[in-house]
Length: 84
Image (cartoon, rainbow, N blue to C red; front, side):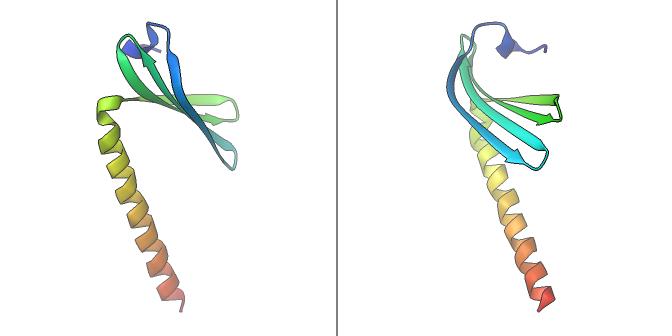
């Protein structure tokens, strides 16, 4: 991994694990000398992909996820209405 956050020891501030079918998502909020970062790792049968979200982008990330959840709710409601 070639990122600024992996060069100094991390202190884990919070961790969560989400399991969905054959996928496992690890969310690790860490801090090091360069700042805080949310590390999101997807594990599918041992293959891992990771993204790093710096703390200054977390509010925007949170807002974007909220809009996606709202769109999912709207699509689900529309599908239920179509089935009636």
